[in-house]
Length: 406
Length: 228
Ligand SMILES: Nc1ncnc2c1ncn2[C@@H]1O[C@H](COP(=O)(O)OP(=O)(O)O)[C@@H](O)[C@H]1O
Ligand SMILES: [Mg+2]
Image (cartoon, rainbow over all chains, first blue to last red; front, side):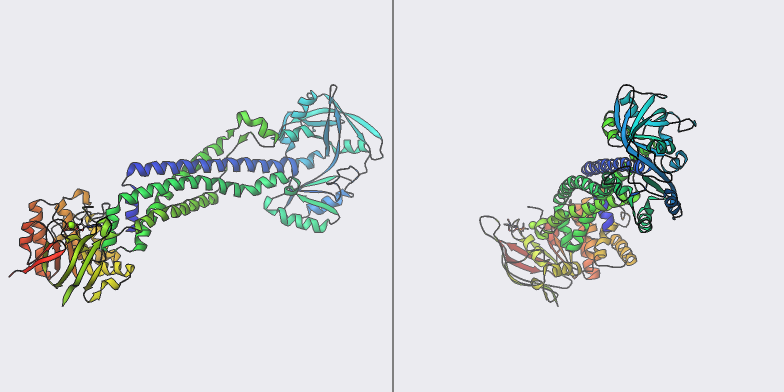
């Protein structure tokens, strides 16, 4: 019956309860929606970090990452690739040649990272082929095709079929160069990436560098699931002990940091919203208690003990908070479902976000477990908010409270 | 056997600048089955006395025994439980929980006593029928007249099977018809079921119904008359 009393009491001062309920609903809905927005943005960033940039695991010569010199190669690449392919949970593998050098257009030049890929192997690991906005993905079998980012094309003032000259020092130390023809222009969600990365066929780059057969600088590994990351990395580390094995979290620590700080950031964010709501709830319940002095005095007089009085006030507070909380979570979910399907265009801010690698069309993401955690936080807030009003009620002296003439 | 026994009861209120001697050495006993009225002008100490008898307030001096128990020795939580199991209360107003129906209000006190649901419901219905509200069990207090509300309060007071019922000016807010009606019900319960009632009033018609009339003045008993 305490439950029924608590619930009905909420609706006694309808306006007052509605005001606080709306405050809780809107506060939480916006909190949850922001969380879903941030999570969506983060997931897209992680997804592009894996699918476009780093893959799940990268393998290099032990010294390559600290000093990306072309001389630190992985020898007998084919057998290494074979060994990795044989691992469980490995979906695809692609080996690459990499050289950091200058690229020149008729008008200007720029420093870039030239990656030599096997187009079919690479397509199984990264999604470069699906990011083309112009041209095609190494389809024609002509000499020296190159795919560059939209941002670089803009910078070099080149178009499809333009000629670009790559100058390198070959393995023997001779300065040499070759002309490449732009066959494709890609665009990812990360403009910095697009400006720095160009892709050529491995065979072309190998010829230019005069590098031996069966060598590479980098082997990218795509797994069936991100959850397998650590176990597979651990196995590869023990098997390829003379090579460096890094996960995308190690290769892109800035993305990994965003991922790991998400939980804490959200708890603090929701915590601040709830703290603000806490004061509103305390105030509402304090008014409810003061207004019911005589009734509470009567209840204590006829024999309702402290525990029950406390429980009654607490139940009322928790119900009020939780009801508002659930409305907020539902509203947050509705917004999440809508914008999870249509996406939110960052519009005016897109340039800034794109340079940091974030998609400009964000699809919100929300998980049930997070909603449940928020609901629990709301309940705890309700319990905390009830303490002061309930103590206030307990301090009433029934003999005094019930007096009519005072 | 005395249901209530008080000796040399004194109450001094220090809350205001001047000390108020609300009760000034009251000796009283009540026996099982009494139907007693406490009368006296406003400010004479009626409410103070009833609050002491009901364990709602502590005297400055004196002794209170209820059914042999010295209630002043009870801890405050024991005292609440003691009230729940031994004393029925009817106040002048604010007797009922506004969000509960008449039936739920009567059931509520039995729920505090942890009476099983079924027994609780049957007893609540029977009591409401006894006070003539068998057809209003599902009405909330705001839908009942003042007299009906007081009758629900009487039913609620009896529901807990108390040793006696204390009623502080139960008819003060009622018209004469409702007053007579409430008193008739109380008298009948007293006569048929031997329930002890101690009530205060300053309404002469209510006084006339009482079988014992205790008159207070300035916190002292100036007369204690038993009829018949
Ligand atoms: N809490 C209090 N503080 C100070 N004086 C009080 C208090 N309660 C009652 N009194 C005083 O005690 C006296 C007796 O009051 P009360 O018992 O209410 O009388 P009655 O019920 O007969 O009208 C009155 O003078 C009243 O003003
Ligand atoms: Mg009085």
